[in-house]
Amino acid sequence: MHIGGVMRVKRVTATPDQTAADAIRLMLDAKVGSVVVVDGSVPVGIFTERDVLKLAGANSAFGTAYLRDVMTPSPLTITADDGILDAAQLMGERNLRHLPVVEGGNLVGIVSIKDVLSFLAERLDAAARDTALALLGAS
Image 1 (cartoon, rainbow, N blue to C red):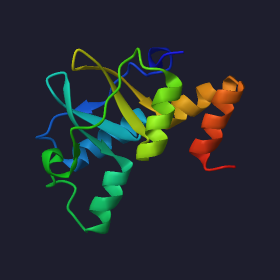
Image 2 (spheres, one colour):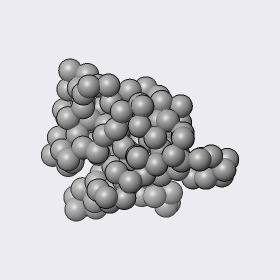
Image 3 (cartoon, rainbow, N blue to C red):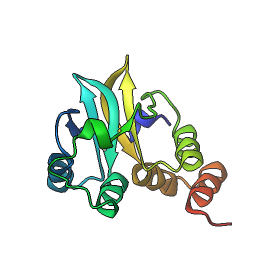
Image 4 (cartoon, rainbow, N blue to C red):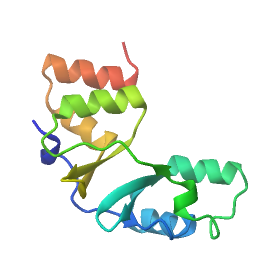
């Protein structure tokens, strides 16, 4: 199975000139854990709940922190044709919770570790089960 079968096409995006406060409002409204920062339709960064915690820990003002300064730049991306097990392995190795999905460099969706693990849990073949257990840190 390919990522295209589990990715969410509802994208929550922001621009680099928006503030962290703007991105947090977008995440809360959409009930998601990340915002893909785009230039047009090209992902240039990602801002996640982990970034929110870093800012809070540094006592930063969310309303004056621009995404261009606090996002993770040049995020890893995958394509809709990439396999789910490959994406799961990448997410596990890099400790990622969200991966933008691109086609021709343009954002077409996003996949979360929850999306991947939900799919893997439904398919209880040995490879999927082993991958899910490895991601969860179980032995």
